[in-house]
Image (tube, rainbow, N blue to C red):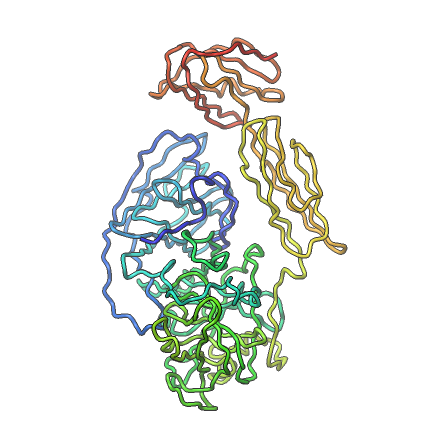
Length: 626
């Protein structure tokens, strides 16, 4: 079974630092059930797993990823509701026997502000979400949770009779028929090997696609592509045979993976953190077949690509001149992003014909050995861009014969020069209408990194929930050509910093504190203020104790603490306690029982919510609030 990593490992679960998308952009958050919720019993349904047996196309066709199953359950009736901290938690466990991984296809999302949906596995070490009202819409697809069980959790301040979302289908990865991470041929070259050093901008435009077509899913590749307005409109070029028979509902559920690559020249053990977007519209494509068409497809993504994904809108060349050298960047077998290099000129040809033909609709290419390997293309590379030596797209992959056991065989890319305006005079069968909307007549256009003229403030802290006296390590995630940084840490020490990466900040008082970062150039600035970002909890000591416990707050104790402080033994029985000493910022409590064992102190006040574990074993030094 392939090893996968989706968003968070358990050891960093509380960080929730990454953003995961808008049609699938999720918010930094944590399921309410993870926060001291004692009940672990909720509803479960088992979905019958029927593997469809279908003939697949040739080796360069879109490689099979898996399939989908209709979810024929009324979620309003099969899920379980519980009340927790004054709010409500709805959960449902879905089991698909023998599935390698599961993803969900939602529809009719209509969440209210502050409502959240999470997906995770029973071990709680793979978490997707929170999905919020920013994801509202008719459709939303998600990435996979590894294993045969997925838990869906909905957090709300309301208890619904009819939930504000539906689950239409489950996506399944199943057995040897599924390809993806770790399945590329051994000859392939990772995009961050030495061969990719001069292609770091171009690679950021290339993405893996989880194609949905009826009840099947496939892996393909494509690229963001620039238009003459240079406005970052999210046009995306791929191959027509990727989801050739998909309908508008299918396209609305395609999932796009940006930056899906190794950080170096080695295959990692775990998948990289995921930057995904779901949803697209098919706006133009070639007619079927390769005799009269060049197999292109142009999509418009439902949402703009977030700046944090470092999107690059690749340039193009429609001159029809054969490039003397260049590369393709692609996702063979649905694996990580790879690069393959050609050092001899492209040849104009008909598809699957090795005879040069000036009127051919395809570029024929042969791949060359390089320092790190002999990159080729494979199933899953379909739709990937081929670049000329200037870094411009000149075609998109249809197919061919090259493979790791057939290194010298050719591949064929549909010419951009033919796709431009040769197939149809109307907008549905050409690129020109979309990529040159003002009819400028240019034959080449540079790529565009929108961040090059903008700056964006960004940061993350590790961890954001601490005990009084601990520190938070801050990481700068800002983008752009920034000249100055100004950090402000409410309640922290230091209170401010002008460093790009300020490092550790210590918090000595309990409470919730804001963090603000201002980044600036001589002409511009951007500010990110996150309210109540750092949560500092009171300290508790000693631990173990003899039944006397000191709670130190570092500031004036909130008025509602004692009315919202409860103590339980390991069996869940509530235990009485006495306040034997109290100051403005400290409490000393004594349990009514001195039975040795584990106890839970639960605080659920307006300002502080936490559960502490303490051990009573009869040993203790004298304690005092003074």
